[in-house]
Image (cartoon, rainbow, N blue to C red; front, top):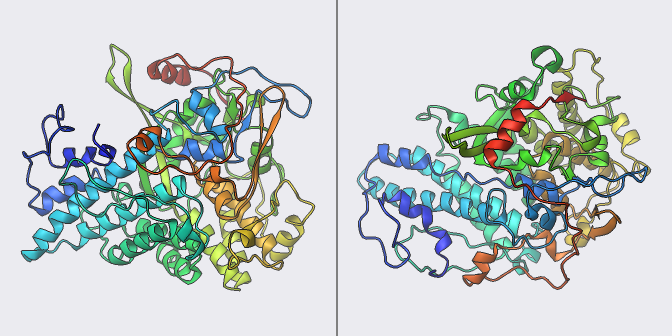
Length: 556
């Protein structure tokens, strides 16, 4: 295979080739010309990756535990796992067993395919602009999409952003800005700092151009609010807090509480998560800003036959099943479903859709709809930024608004106001289940969390953990705050700790990419020994989908 061909695949589709049998051996010379506004708009439908980083982020974080490791009573299950890549990822080993859904390969491939579409569109847009055609809306969408997909890549495969100087020594990813005209391009990894600067450039160039004018369903494109929500998250990671607040304000308006996603009384509305999921991913809900259809089998790992790794025990207890600064007896307004509460559970937004390509053969694709940007998460971005700007009162107001939105879906609970006093009382040094040591100053001398705001930062991180459950963003939060993670693995509870400066906090590049010549992430430590599961899933996706729809689930 020609060097770095994985970056080129979708550009072939974008140029309309009818056959790719020999595209690896020669430069394509039969292309459909992208020469109109309509064609570019159709092309940009494909400018969104169908890959999903949720599984890799969740299983690498503290949001999942090993059910085959003994619990507090000494009891352990002997459960199979859906795929060997789960064993590898949970142990923070390089994932070498799979290129299927949810793997590092699928993330890399899916993001660069989307980027290739963006670059093809931008090239065609430049030619139309030279002819006097107004292409601002299309150009804005392509630039923001290109920035977003590089943002995912650098946060998965690179270390967390530290600061502009220290991040110059951390490996990032290639930043692709030109359409492919040769089969074997020359790509190199930029530093994390360079990637962030390129993302910033694309955001600055594109965000004011984004328009909602031509979308049939705006929530499946980078509409104006989704673009500003992305900018708020990006600048939060980069610690440019004035810009976080500016972009979040564009999303939230003058009264954030009126635009938040609010859950509902699930005990009244539905008795099964297949109905509840439609509420979470409702494209008409003002709280959902960008919905992405992905190919993911992550949900199947929660089936009771394959749930070695689960949202269970401490992970579930200290998010949804325990008290908080202004709630008790479980987080309000959100149901946790399970087949067996002892095995762990899930929130309905993780549920899947199955698309049959051949009903007789029982084959098809498993889709997960990812709520990539929401007003609720953007509100938490702003609250965090307010704290670093010294506006504690505004931060508390945002955090209170966030909790009240969830209280709105819990009619059996009386809403309790969140106050500064409650935050400081709850997130104290003795609350070790909620308060995790932060290593920000070790990561960068410019990243200081002062004692007077640390309880509030711990509150934000706790709320973000709840808000983004199953989404993979907890992993990014743990990385950017240098929070260390402990995984207990297997029947003998082998303890593995991922230190704040561990090289494995940057997921290893896919093996296929390394073999093709791309510089790998450094690995000076050995791989963690994995106590193998009793087995792996051998059932087809169609069988799993049928099983999921037929077995009885309960809320707990």
